[in-house]
Image 1 (cartoon, rainbow, N blue to C red):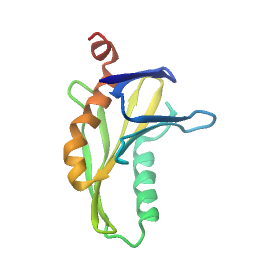
Image 2: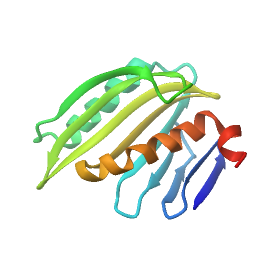
Image 3: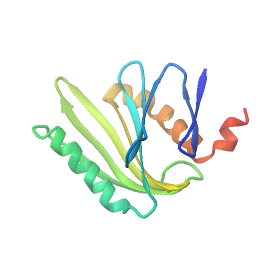
Length: 150
């Protein structure tokens, strides 16, 4: 089953067993979706004048700072966010944490009245299973009329 998010001028669908938290008091605004296992997708909403390249680099630097003793691999990404979606820039990131390999995708794109920075993160094996869920959530954000019509 799916749930609907509608707020901040955005709407999307997500799995009903995921938790949603919002921080909308100051900029950037944040919407965090978390799976029962701890995997997450975060949406950071910035004003339209924000620089996408700067936001992407700041996000990568934040990851490097948080996991400073880890060997972090970051591969650049510049392509469509989803099918029929906006162009996005970002990184595919992987690093080790304890005995796990963690994968993350950082993406930045313009949509609605925002520049949106997203981050999807999960343990390696789980990421492979959840990547389509992350993409479906983002697709429903970009195409809300289509995803809500069902």
